[in-house]
Length: 116
Image (cartoon, rainbow, N blue to C red; front, side):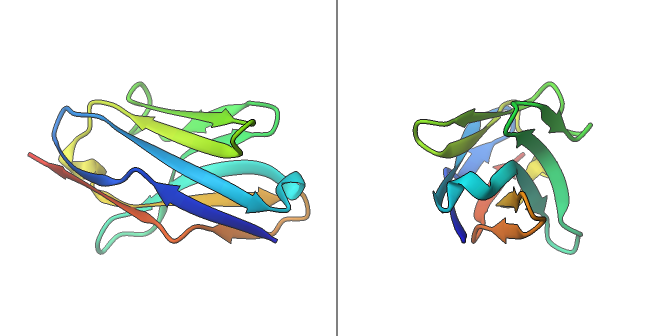
């Protein structure tokens, strides 16, 4: 199995930056992609950004140019650098790992709040 733990959330003002980290443990070798999702109050969970084992990245249109996903293989972490934050970025951010056989693993989430 895979365990994920997010960190780095907090309260910031609009225009500021935050860096989220997702630390993976367990059977790391079964992970083929890691993604960040977010869920705002009253809204569905949405994909923010993803990165595959091969390094291919993808990001939602709403965060392109502001958020960057990256991985540190030595530390088994995937980071989400969030710049120029907006109030509409306020949400609980979740780390997700997809295994080679299609299973999904989730972290507990970390709150990001952006004040105007």
